[in-house]
Length: 424
Image 1 (cartoon, helix red, strand yellow):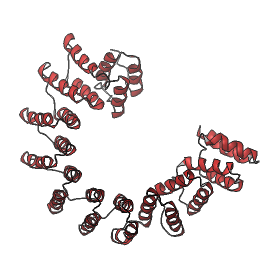
Image 2 (image 1 turned 60 degrees about the vertical axis):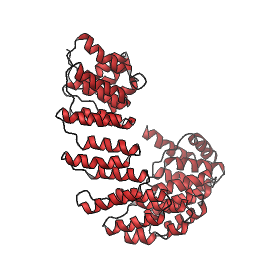
Image 3 (image 1 turned 45 degrees about the horizontal axis):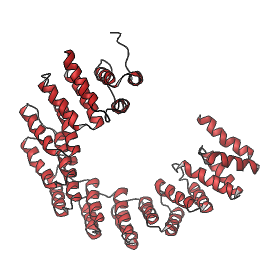
Image 4 (image 1 turned 90 degrees about the vertical axis):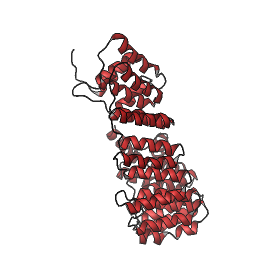
């Protein structure tokens, strides 16, 4: 009656003070008030605060309280309840709510509400119920849409029923719904995950010839990844060539997928040999290719080779990858090679590529240099940190400050702590 201005903060305050059942009722009411709509964050927050996942009975109690009180109930109210079920992943309760809505309150669900319950059923693995609901939509005058069919395809694929996922395409077309690239890619991925690589290649061929939903870099990379997981690198490279012939170029994910797989399989030289294929034929940058190699070499415990390659990159024109830089510096720190880590970081700084290095690395290196009395290097690093406004991180912060003060670098400490004050 007061008609207060609703916002997320005021709603959270109410939920923090309400008993759970009343909290759900208030949240449902707030969800369709004029001038306000719940964000996805609010459904997550409400679900957690009201502990709906741990006590799904709250939902049943709320619906039954509406019935017992003879409350005026609308479709919008049920939509809010179903969204809470979705957030808490309550497939059975969502289905119960859908049935209660129609049987007790004589309200009819729309396509969005059916899709929500169908997706929950598919995620739970109850594909038969999802299919039944899809048929029910048609008999209620609703048309299953791309979201409906996507949920069914994902449900079949996750259950390893890839052929049944493929059969959904025929059903879609019969109902005048054209498959899009997302659905075709999901079916392709299902074939790959179930090991039906021949069927995957047949579908890929259909997509290439179809003209409408043509494969993209994600599609091809998914197939390459599947062959790599099986150690079928020749077949993976064949897909890379097929990709180029189709006019689609590899990206950094494609590069890392192949390079990492070859290195993990003991074919390091072959991984190096992909330079021309990726950089020359696919236009991948030097930095992306060699950064993938550096990370892959570290993962197979070839740290020295990774460092050597990284230094060659620094000496050349390659643009350094932030992830490769951070991982390599962290690895050197873990191996207690603090001085090596500092010199590498200094070289990266001189190259002008330190914009996104993990700030924790600076703190770890600084305290390590201080503890080993490498004052000259510690001072240089502190000045780099000042230049980039990098904060000292606990637990290294206090120890580093104490050591720098001990060595007479009080002015430097004041400047470093000044950064913290500005941030605060």
